[in-house]
Amino acid sequence: MRERLESKSNEVMCKYLYKPKILETIDRSAKNMLKNNLAHVLMLYKQNIINLEAAQKLIKVILELKDNNLASIEINPELEDLHFNIEQYIISKIGPDIGGQLHTARSRNDLYATLDRMDVRDKILPIFNLLLDLRSTLLDKAKKHTKTVFTGYTHTQPAQPITFAHYLIAINQALERDFTRLNNAYEQLNLCPLGSGALAGTSFNIDRNYTAELLGFGNLIENTLDAVATRDYLLEIACSFTILGSNLSRLAQDLYIWSTNEFHLIELDDSICGSSSIMPQKKNPFTLEHIKAKSSHLFGTFSSVFCCLKNIPYTHVRDDAESIHLFWNAVTQIEAMLKLMNVVILTIKVNSQIMEEKANRNFCTATELSDELVKREGIPFRQAHQIVGSIVKECYQKGFSSTDITIDILNKKFLEYTSKQVNWNKEDLTDILDSKKSIYRKKSIGSPLPKESQRIIDIMNERLKKDFNSFEYKKSKLKKAERKLSQEIENIIKMTT
Image (cartoon, rainbow, N blue to C red; front, side, top):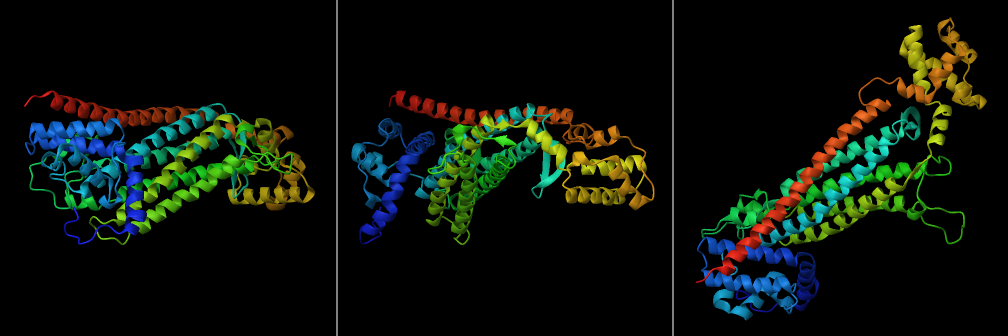
């Protein structure tokens, strides 16, 4: 294979490039490499490119390698990669006349382009399942808290009353979009480059659709140059992971703040917290800190893959091998983030009473008071906003909470701005400033109204079922392809010459 070159591979190349890549490929890709070879041999025989004897001998030696997980191969880095090591082993076992036919109508370029996609496919499918699990956990938790009054915050300051379910639904909708992005990226990933050769296809009468079917791909990358050149599916998936990681990090940050002693709105389970080496009172939210930190790894992967690919020629080059190498860390990090967050949500304690007490005292119903002044007194909203703003200001100056607002305070400010007073009683004002009643007055679609939250939860559960079915369909297609590959192999082995 190095006939064009006058010297053997440099030992530095072997140490830092070839050997690490071979070992990594064995560890991650051995199964897919051998499936790739089996599918190719089956296709060569089907198309009468090799005869039955060659097909049978090749299949048998490949199956032996598959059974012992390549343990019988003595790795030689000077052969540059795993494929050449496998090929040389096969030739040593069944001779060059037949063993040398394995690489007919194929290049390492389309072989490794296909292998990369199969490896990435294997790694991201479990991520779908973890994301579905987290969405299910969030919906189960939301269903329990449709009536749990909770302060909605903007700029980390009390804004308006919502429910804890309303917050969890918002997070879940973000994760639904994450699933859709990842699902779309999978469709671009699951396209087969095999049969493209080095970049220009082949003059042999191959059947690309047949090998794609045997390997579980949804379709082909038809243009043979694009097939060996593109790695943009890595960018799509890395970007999807990065956005998902950002959403998980924002959720972690909220829970991180709300678990502080000052808020005490939620409490993390002891099993996912850590202690201090010096301070005996500490209960540290390590899990949330790790989730937040891990999101940076995802962005790091995306930017690294992007930088690796952005200025390379649009053809096969070794730079693309580096891009796939950079990708694996992102899979590890997003897997950890999803599993950790699922445990957090499953075990979280919601301090419902404290949530409602704070919502009743922190002026988050001030907008409700402004709205009622508009409805009942017929004044412009901007004027109502000014009146209530001045009431809140005075209360803060006096150390009052929103429960201390009285009819006298309201009338004093109302008189300053309108030259008249309201004809309300104490019960009217108390009712308006009550955070729970504020929630039940909401009418718009998607509001925190418990009935509306339950409606959305039911819809989201239906979408979850559909997404779960689409995930199961992906797995079933791959299993079906494996069964067909096995059956085709069995049929060839049973044939007699």
